[in-house]
Image 1: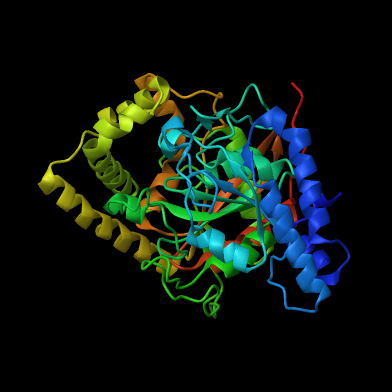
Image 2: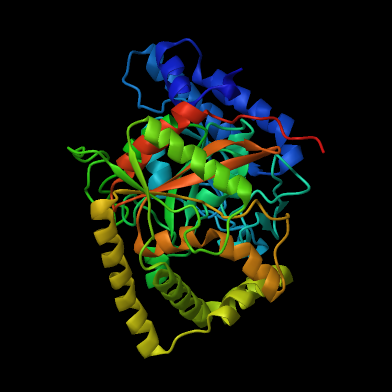
Length: 467
């Protein structure tokens, strides 16, 4: 069935004429109709436009015109990324009528490569209301592996669930502290968080430019079932783009290293414990890398606490300035989550904020020095299993939910790339790991993740568990 195929295979089959793009789109629309009621990942269909785009792909193929590398491949788009003619709701009722007239740069680039936006996906309110994907506007997205026991993660949980269940082969989400990697790990799929400035993006609402932390931390990126599909999208999205002055003109695959790549292994990076299932998954990934010829050595990751302090300080300070306006858009539960975040790290004064920007450079410098010896770092996405499907509303619950993903937070602060890759299934739940690289070395992360995948396999698509 077409919904089980990878993006790379679908593009090849459409290009060869073995299947039409219209058939591919219609098959995935049928899959959404069949499984989305069980998981609530897709929030809006772009069916008419998708069929029209597919018809154009088929016309061009029949006419012998060149097709892009993703021609005929459907994908979902998180509801905080602009799609022309579709509301960027960010999950809240106040923005349900905010309909942009142009695509965000990554949507435009995927379209130019022949890919077809098929649907929009769920996210937490304004992407700030916790890492469980539930929104005031669309309700709760469910983890297909354990719908009533485990969260699908967030904030790109809609795209991860849609990809895991075969509704699409690709999802476009974003990550500002683990928001691609966490739902990928919790749902048994792969994701790529690019380096800061690697892909063009545009997260403006009403033309208002984001503040510094919101310029530096959030990055758009793909979710897929296979590493090969991530690599295909990376080649499309990487590079200079007139839609974003931050996008750097670095080739997708810089020169390959002329020596053996060392991998630092940090099973428990903060030394505060790791669930046995998570540990066994990381160890399986490490063994796979050793079998593939990598040198894997246990390490201490530099500047972790520094990175966390700087990240939370910058975020809390900037949120506090806009909080009076933002809080009116959120549900009571969402407001409480943000308030707990601010309470844990009160806003900095001007001198403290300026100092935090300098400390960020210091953390980046420490990671760059570490990367000179260890171009790759293997560690957990989360040190614990997926939490229950709820947004924490008291300080202890909040700490238990956020502490396990601190390696995601630290790597976001320093702006380096990371690939989340599935590594197995334990007691009915997927296991995941992340491979973090030096700045702009997404290619090394992808190569190592591919080596893991070749030995440990692909876990999805799956049908949602009926329990």
